Length: 154
Image 1: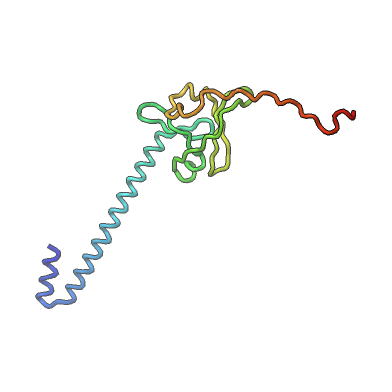
Image 2: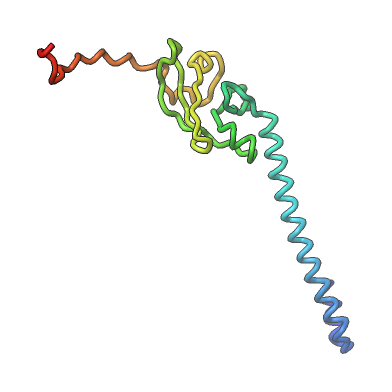
């Protein structure tokens, strides 16, 4: 239909009308692109809103509650609080911390370490729990004392 209007204006020899019609067509295309961009942005906001509703905070880190009731994570507190992005923290080690078995995670963004008791993993249904050790390794045996160069002179 729009092309027909341009052809009619061209046949009538009305160059001004042709230019105006082409300007209107260009504006319509720009508006279509803007509508498309805004629709994508709305979808991103909907996704963030859905994630925010499913995000829970335990032991200084964020976790996402899945539809099946499991918890996925942990995710960086700083990245979620600042950018609303769920970015995983890095597993570091499983160890005893003051007699309590814990998993230690590092947030590379905040340069901070977090400890999560293994009891939390046993209590909650953590999606990736099978990827982590079930208990800390046994402590290293004490090393024998090395003789120093002054031993025997005392």
